[in-house]
Amino acid sequence: MQQPITAPKNAVIYKLLRQPRTPMTTVASLGVHILDVLGRPVTRIPDGQNIDLLEEIRFTVAGTAAGTAVDLAKLGVKVIAMGALGEDYIGDTVVGIMQHYGIDTDCLVRKKAVQTSATMLPIRPNGERPALHVIGANGEFSLDDICWDRLKQVDFAHLGGFYLLPKLDGEPAGQIARFCREHGVRTTMDILGIPREDMLSVVAPSLPYLDYFMPSLDEARMICGLRDWRDVCKFFLNQGARACVFKMGANGSVYADQNGVILRMPAFKVRVVDTTGCGDAYCAGFIAGLGMGWDIEQSMRLATAASALVATALGSDAGIVNLEQTIEFMNTAETLPMTE
Ligand SMILES: Nc1ncnc2c1ncn2[C@@H]1O[C@H](COP(=O)(O)OP(=O)(O)OP(=O)(O)O)[C@@H](O)[C@H]1O
Ligand SMILES: [Mg+2]
Image 1 (cartoon, rainbow, N blue to C red):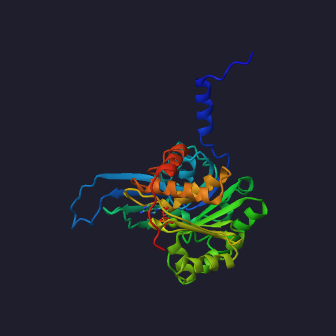
Image 2: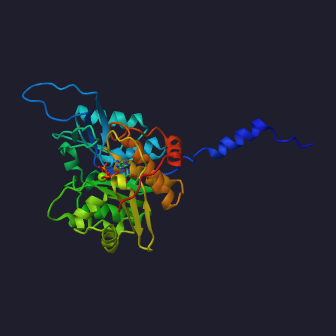
Image 3: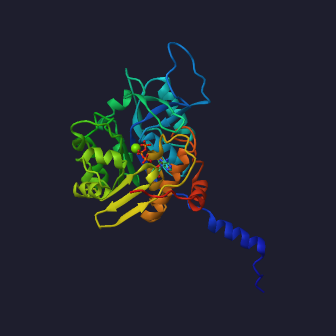
């Protein structure tokens, strides 16, 4: 005779059903790799040679490719890092931290006679983060350094940090994006929008091959000179991106695609300590969501949760523990009002 299902068995099945699915996806995170040195709270540079005492100083692996790589790894995604480091202790530290998170670092190249890129970030009491940056090895990363064989096998390529990759900015980046499209690899791109004359020429060759163009709205505005987010979305869709996902700080984010779908997502309410890396975490959450087969709206929500968690502590890798905690936060946190 069939046994009745007992309560403990039910509990186990229920627990299994509630487990988040680990994203079974592989991502190449290609581009800017930086070691961030952050201190807080900083209100001034001390006079003369005086010392001010801080509450906290941290080292983190950061940058639009490396920061996203760490967040993706924390969310359970398999990541291959592609970028350039110097042959120095900073580079060793970046590799060590990435390996600690289980990231495949075999495709990171080490450049001679140039330091690993680094940023000093004196974080203000309100979470703002002025930055002092050395471009270093990122300036030497070129098409010759890319592991094409591995790139064509991944599910997603996240291209991160254009404007800080002088040997890849513009046409070479377009070649990478086109290669990904030809091999069925879905592409996301984030940038580090540094104001200059020819801003559009840096991203224009990539746009026709991008699945998701993911800068901040402010960066996108800088490139096209338009103000209203609807116009900004239209501009980049006309340039050929399949979809735009623009990050809007505490105002959340917006998605628009070639099929006319537009989604607005509010940010989550958190006590902000430091917003360094929120944009990188947003990209990680979005890709992790898509990798689990979630729809765009749910992927944006996971992205928003990951980015909000990063804002709650010092450094671009802070706040996110794992996928389960990020989903729990996503399902329980309050949202902020949207003002535009
Ligand atoms: N103050 C905040 N409160 C809550 N969420 C925030 C806040 N600032 C940023 N976020 C979240 O982080 C996401 C990305 O932040 P932001 O728009 O600043 O991107 P970004 O400028 O690309 O960041 P980064 O400087 O790290 O590249 C936002 O869409 C939002 O969900
Ligand atoms: Mg950004």
